[in-house]
Length: 227
Image (cartoon, rainbow, N blue to C red; front, side):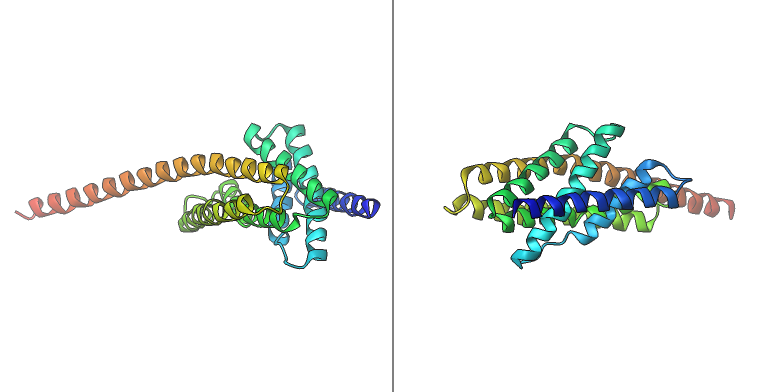
């Protein structure tokens, strides 16, 4: 059983590395981060959990290989801060724990679902910025959906799932500790996201006020010139 899981994880890691290499070859004019984010985007689309236990195991193995790949990439290129590295490390430990114990796959898959459901939007935002299309209606929609999903799923639904896990006598104590740690990391991300959303909203409001003042002055000056 353990050998089979290790083989699945190694196959997953090899698959993600191969996909990353392929993206690098296909996008030679782009940066390494461009290819890595394409891999992350792909994982975010594919890693939706399933209530079927055998499929849950496959999802865990697939995702464990991805997180090992992405953590190694982030450390090698030093592209992320301590918070993201902590998130990846906790995710890896949580998946290994679920696979080793043969239980708590439901909780871990739920956390992965909540984490990855916002990931494609995060990657779309980065690609829009890189291609010069971020400051547009599309960029505003992506940002709004990302903030709404993150708040509703990772914070709102996540709080309910954490409560259910804490009051249930079934999960082991270290599983509960891991759940609290992951939720704390989500709140750290949430604070940064809300700060970003607030600053962007204020900036857009000031820009709108400035345009309104300019239009009012133009109408006023035009009216004066007619006399």
